[in-house]
Length: 155
Length: 191
Image (cartoon, rainbow over all chains, first blue to last red; front, side, top):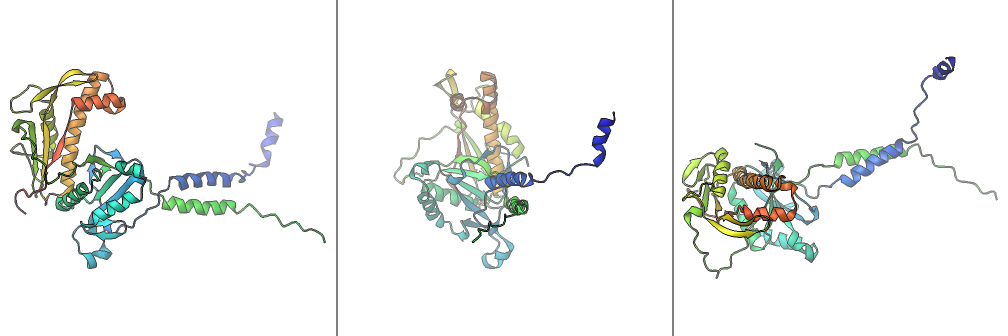
């Protein structure tokens, strides 16, 4: 009996922290791999609507984004409050879309061009006029696969 | 000369460095997965193209949305909640009604000779319609199609539409076509 009692006498042994760096590194690698750095800084506020029949966007490298929404507060003085289009890092006009799409195509492999998708990130309060114009413009340059960005969920 | 061994570098601060990096990546990570409604736009129409053959009125399911986000479906104003059932009735036409779409005989793998609806959904929006409404309407129409496809898949293969093989999915897609056509832009009900 006393055999066992003696063992527990010296208090709890300190937990070795030697493996702490390993654990932390493991976490670090996980986050490093799963991180997607934001490429563009949004100058407009986009609050996409909700929908139920959503599909995930696969192959992010083949997706080009078009943002539409009202300018953020710091840009209101310059650009007003009417919804604007943003391509890459700057405000754009409808006529810039064709150039943008061809630039996006040039950046990709020729084989992958037919697989390219255009993701429309449009604020829910935007009027359809501007969206229709964008779609017509995309049709003109044959970028036919589009994805209306939405959040999953019911209204 | 006595060769001096360099002092060993302490590894004790490794955890601190790793923690710092970890916190940076934790903060910088955005876990949101981009998702949305996939659509394919119709190819551009060349200027010298012949006008398409007229489609019978019974084969078209007209959905109009005006600038006040109100729906007019087949001539009657309805709410967005009723849209899905209306669309399902239109696509299926179970009683072969005269005012709902015609059917044609098509040979489809897995199904054999079957009667497929000729119906087309035509969605027209005004320039003043809000995008939110447009997405909601599109979503309802796609839901209608997907529910029918799910039912067919359940009946035929005993599985949900998304769980069956690609061949079978393509067969069902042919069996239940849900073409949604978006008209060339025009103004409905003024500016």
